[in-house]
Amino acid sequence: MLQLCNSWPVPVDKVKNEAKLLAQTTIIRIEKHTDQFKVSPNVVFSGLELIPDSSSDKALDSLGSVEENLGIFQEILSSLPVDNVDQILADIINLQTIIRSLAVSISCTPLKSRNTDHLENFLKNNSTFRFTIGNVALDRLQKYLLKLIRNLDQLKKC
Image (cartoon, helix red, strand yellow):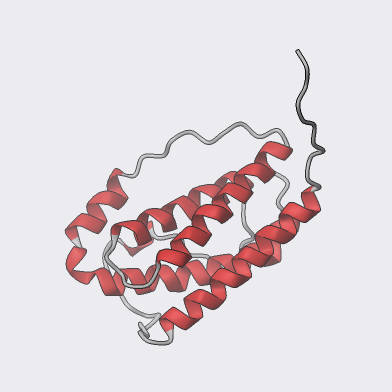
């Protein structure tokens, strides 16, 4: 067999920089979106613990947990009829792909499918509060991405 093409792997630092740039771009998009609708950070709502919250000082755990949390944000934003989040959603999907490629570069095995029944039920049962849930999710996503930018270089675990 004749090999038709050959390529060198992309350096990990370049991939991390792309991830940071995309995260920063997404943060700016979220800021523009949330300027219109402010939600109190003290809102109390049963089930909000299903939305990843990075407000603690604890560093991000692993590439796998980052990929999983981005998947949760993706699920929330794609299931709620919140206006003008299509580009943010596309950014999350692209960032998740970049994180997955970083995981592959350090020989991580692909993540198993996670059980999203609790999240799906929460979103379905609380669809009346879609704007509140959507804005809480965007606020938490913004904080999560800031933490990802600060900690991405230290993430070396699957």
